[in-house]
Image 1 (cartoon, rainbow, N blue to C red):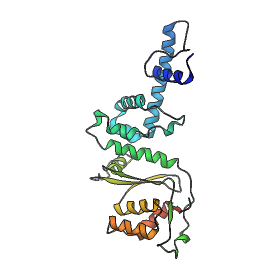
Image 2: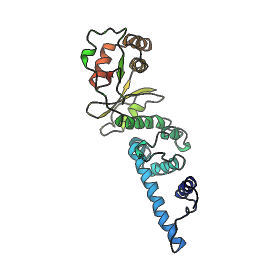
Image 3: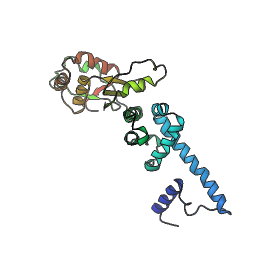
Image 4: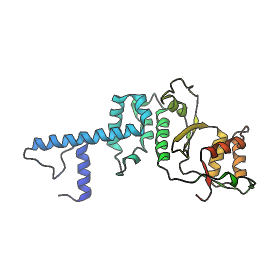
Length: 249
């Protein structure tokens, strides 16, 4: 028998259609091939199903037959590296952008980025929301605010937030935005993953807080990005969804 790394490589190659790996035998060679073909097909079906569960909007946009072929192509070059199959698919957005049959649909990659980020947000660590009393009377020049571990901000090249929303139940009549969007993804206190488009000012505020800037500096950056930005509206909204936590977290 070959060494373990070599055996794994040959077993993986067999799953992609190469010769059977060493040790896979039966009384009749054809029987061994038939039995392994069943296992090979089960792996393909399982990976396709896992990818469709992680990227349901992509599956809906391209249709089941196309998605099955797409998933096979992706799985051939991006094998799962962890036994936790929910962690698979980080490279899928970039793969979609470089997949020639989807060249006419450049927004697919951004929609997939939203879907992957929603999965990450759902499985993120817990953190207690900031008590409102922490803001009362605090000096904005020194006050630093943390953000919930599930919060993800995506700067997207396409109106992918509205495309994603239109492909949710009851969302077909929602308006379709034009141009790039910034997505805010967050798991709320009820363990629902929220998604909404945010303004340049909101994004600048959040990014500054992530960098550890005091509230006053973060608000100044937000105002520079969007002169109409009003932190008095954004901060309560972030608190309502549990996005603000103590800066120690």
